[in-house]
Each structure stands twice: as C-alpha cells, then as structure tokens.
Image 1 (cartoon, one colour):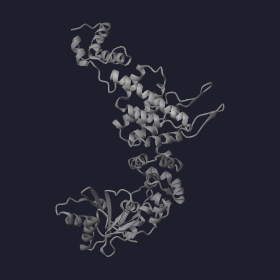
Image 2 (cartoon, one colour):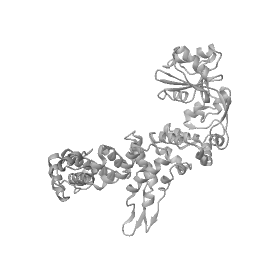
Image 3 (cartoon, helix red, strand yellow):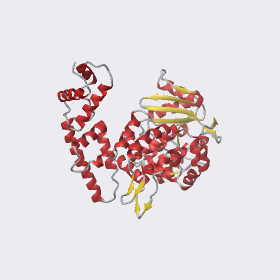
Image 4 (tube, helix red, strand yellow):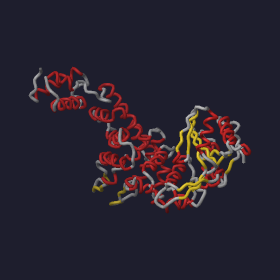
Length: 473
C-alpha cells in the first residue's frame, strides 16, 4: 500500500530528506503520530518523527545542511537523537533501535536495530506504522501489525503481547486511556485485562509524566471516558484515591445519596462542553472532593455534607503538591472555585440580600463568570423541567449580581481610601490600626452601610478612628 504524498504540504521537505538520506546511504522513514493522523485525516501535527537504520544525528546534520548551511541542529547524544526547527515544524531524527527493560525502571537498554525492530517497540499498532521516504519505495506504508485495520475499527491494540508491553513501560497504560479518550477508540480486551493486572507498575513512573497524560485526558472532548477507565482498571486509586472515596451509595432509614464519583464525572463532561480552560475543568473534578470526609446522616434531615467546599479547597493544595501540579496562581484559582462552588446556589431566592451578592462578587472577583459556568455544570438532574428551573434561577442571580456590580463596583475591589491616606490623615506610622480601619471600610461597603466612594470612606474612617482614640492630624 502506498500513501499519496503528492498533495501533502510537506512534500518538498520529504523529498529533500529523501535525497539527503540517499546521498549518504541512509534509510529514512516517517513514523509515529504523524502517520496515524495523516491516515485519520486529522489536523496535521507540527511534530514529525523520522527513523533511520543508521545514525539519526548524522541524518539530521545532513538534512540541516540541505535546508540551509547555517541551519541549527540540536543534538542529544545521550539519546542518539537530533532535532531541527524548520518553519512551524519540529523535525526529530533518531536511529532505529531494539529495547530491553529491567523490572524497576521504564528506561530501556537500547541497541541499534532495523525498522522492524523499531516498530515492535511502539506502544500501539496505530502508532507502529511507517511511511518510507527511501527513493526506491517512496510513500510505501509499512504496517506489520495491521494498524490501518485497527484505525478503521477504532481499536487500541499493542504490537506485542500486552502484559509485557505495559510492564516494560507502565506509562503506556495512561497513554492507552488517553488515546481512548481523545480519539474515542476502544481498548481491546486483552489490553484491558493486562492494564488491570499491571496497574501497580504505574508506581515506577514519575508523577510529572503521569500528569502530562492525565491533563490530555482532562482536555479531551469527553473526559469521563478516560476517568472512568482509570477507575475501572485500578489506576485512579493510585493517582487520586480521594476521588475513589466518593464512589458508592449508602442507605440509612431508606434514604440514599447520589454516587458523588459518577456525579463528578458528569460535571466534568458538562463543563467541558463550555470551556477548554484546564484548571476550570480541574475545579469541576475536585468540586466535591471534600464530601467523603464530611458525609453524615442526620435523623429528620437525611444526608448532609456540611463544610465540604471549605475542606475541599484545603485538600486542593495537598493534592497539587502530591500530583506535581503548579502551586502558583493555577492552584489558587482551583482552590477558589472549589470553595465558592455552592455559594451561588444559596443566593437563588427572591430575598437574597445585596450584601450577600456583593460578598460573592468580592470573593469571586474576575472569576465570577467561571464560577457560574461551574455551577451550571453541577446541574446533573435528568428531570428536564428541574434542569430548566435551575438554569433559569442561575440566570436570575446573574442579573441581580450585574445590577449590584454596576451600582457598587466591588468586583476586583480596590479600597476607595489607601493605607497611606489613613496614615497622613492621623499622622500615623505603619501599624495594626491602619489594617483595622481598612477592613472596617471594606466591611461597611460590602454591607451597604456606605457607598464605594472615597468621600464617604474618609468620613467613615474619621468616625471609626475616634472609637480607637485617634485624632485627625
């Protein structure tokens, strides 16, 4: 089978690489994801991997000279690879190799090999196809493991025996689930059984590498596909056991609560229809994380989860530290979303005070719209009338908040009087009195006692300062 590369926008480059290899008696093949995506007619990747049965570094250097004698070639001698940035492309060159693994590491012993050896070491048949750029068979598809058939059938299958494949490099288990989620493929049964059996091997993989795959699952069209597979195959328990603690339903006196694990997956899918923001999707994943620890049955009331948002927001930091996720603004954003996730629901009443609305605006700040996106995603009832009612209620609160915001301007609140102004007014040095007075101003504005206005704030500070025994300078 030959692939028609005549219409490919990179044809000129492929011809150049073919000639560079031929001049130096080297073989050359395109391999990996580029071949898969080309056959699937997906958007072409800007990363293209090339394999030669000789030296990948030499081939890259020769290709670089053909493109431009001044072309920079990045060489990674340890790995026997080299990379060229050309236009908007990253071209990686490597020598074909055989691999063998030891039990306690996913780093293989490597030796030179043929294109067939190289294809055998690939993770899945759909990634084990190669296109020859050799002059005698330019464009020929080399597909020893029937990857094309698996592509057509939407199947994920390993080229070699699956248990060995996953044991050798356990990260492949996460990659299988990621491809199932992003490509909407099915993992074939032998592979599913092998992942279940080899799940514990994931412990030898660094958390950073696991999170790269996890985040790709989180960014897929329907993340629940991958998240559910991780739970069913025993990987989620190793990565985020706190999510697995949400699984299951208890019954007391005939009263049950919903399965908060499956509810969480629904919320993640719901929010993914409306945002590509990874950390907002993480907020959906963790919004109920505190429920397992706060679950309580109260006679006459039923199941309660008091304070689960506050506890959940505290758990976010511990989770992010363990999962090697960013600990700066991204983590703080998720903490804020989890902590505020139930606040708008409490305001869905006609008598919700302007003060309560101002406080929510103050606490949510510029993330107010994201918070509403999360709250709407949290509506998972299957009753269409209830669903419409909840959504109408949220729209009602959004209108009320907009009215309060236009009137009081407390989103991204900046005090109408600064600490420096207070010090000048009373001839004070920096100290606790300044903080007390600034807090009183903030509270008075949020409670609606004074307007968010510098003149009103100054008069208020003067009256409050007198209670602290302070006199105007």
